[in-house]
Length: 255
Image (tube, rainbow, N blue to C red; front, side, top):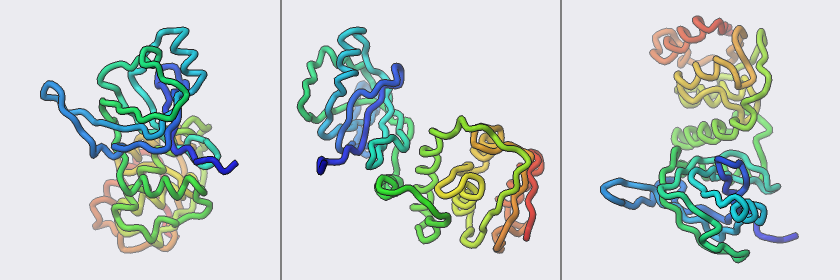
């Protein structure tokens, strides 16, 4: 039972089948690049990759190729927590490459739709062991780390974005540690969806969340607690926020 933890699974975007698993992915932050015919591409390396037997059988049967994949971050129980999208430059035919059952290194060339930040990868490592069970765990993080936090909660929340939307709810927003727009969205996500929750990372994504699919839809009320100077009406961000909430029938109440 003391086997090595599998950190990533590779999922074929077309069939939704698990292609295989690997211990690590070099280049997930987009730091490895290569050029071909004056075009720049990302290079990733799947360390200790092992193809899934079911996918091998699927390829042999259908002669399918792989073009777009999800690079899924796994927790210690082997569940996917979130994923990064990778589009291969050239379709990959696993049945032609003769992948066996041995652990191998696989180099892939293509495009990362979203690059993983260094800070997000550090947070994923913590979440592998245990997901957040209390709010404000982000308060001691630097601004860059908080941005990494927002990246993680955004990708983690995709799996639950099909939940039924609640309306006319009342939510408590703890503004104790809110000093800028980044910390505001960290706190907003938790006010709406609990510890490690997501509800936008900027004003544009907030408007997307207000259209539904993230557990809550207007009209609803947010009770602001422990409000700081950040929420002053002379704050340009807060002015835009107020306008969005007013137009979408979201009521802000200062307690």
